[in-house]
Length: 146
Image (cartoon, rainbow, N blue to C red):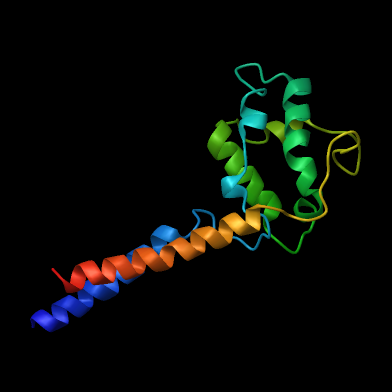
């Protein structure tokens, strides 16, 4: 019975480590929005007034580097990005959609930096995935010597 209990604990630990290493927002998005710097927005766009000019400029400064990914309807980048913006900024629903409009085609990123590829974030995502393996191995060894 002790061996069966040990295997159950081992399996449970492996599953927990896998879930712990997963991102809180699972999505099909080539940008890892979890590790972006949201102070660009949160330091400038503050309530209770949420000044439209400051909020929209801060939003553009943050989002324009990712326009290729956010505008791609085949992934979840836009919804993932807004989830993290609202998580870190605790903004009212629809704040940026209601305040920030440049025309029929949405926001213009003219005058704001844009990237065509994602740099740094993919490495962070791989690094997070690689940390799960040592955590799993450590957990398994600890259970075996218990």
